[in-house]
Length: 360
Image (cartoon, rainbow, N blue to C red):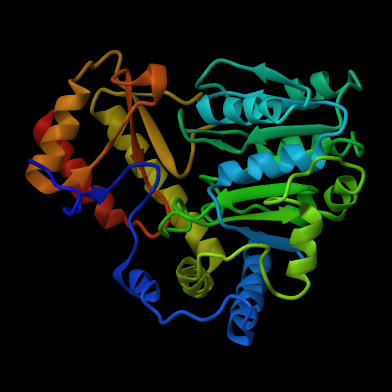
């Protein structure tokens, strides 16, 4: 019988494995969150995040999951009506989150497994009905990565529409050039490609998005952009932050920059191609639309091969203490997901796939 105290090496799409040296940062002695030491930690971490995200603007830290930042975007950035593009469970949830915050939001969906295309964005925004749009760059439920670059080109035609991007499972694994692409809100949480324990989210905020919040009523308290900015200018956070995670985030930024961002992106592409090739060689399909496969996780289509996915997951854990991800929602057992993000290396995947072969 398994115990919560046992560690199963994680190949799920988050939380992901955290290196021992990063975990050690969580055990650092605490400092006061209004102290000079924390201000220095915040400022240093912020500078590194700006470099990694290719922005000279605001990068704010939030004590929440990225779901909290969905709500922040709804309350601070949607005045007239938003459109939320959905191609899977998480992108659709952002639209529902906006609606639950009392805002008008149309959810425009495509079939799961398909990408959000620039033509759809253009056709939808041409109506003039919207002042904000949201979409997930990388849909974690289906393993689809939509074309951010091409969509950003469309968004340039609509300067009055805020461009808000969920990069939860893509940030740091592939290049996101926040300023050049004109992204107004770009958000993520740290338990995926950052390879950190959950509990911290981060997001960029453009000048346009910041100005927008000034006309908004009922922004709430926890995610009020005015309070974020006031504290940010003092190298601080609104509420007591998870200081251990910020210690670890600072170290991870150093490690990413030491690896070299282009090297990091190339490693993720190489790992993704390896897993896709293995899947096809072993009789599985790829659930993602061809040409739009994620570089951080592969969603293997099991409908033709039809292995017993729960039995595989159980065997991997009981024999090897490996945790694998089943399909999400309606895709359970029809697919399963292998993550290849963060600090994972090719050797980890070679070991995993060898063990899966022994079971199928």
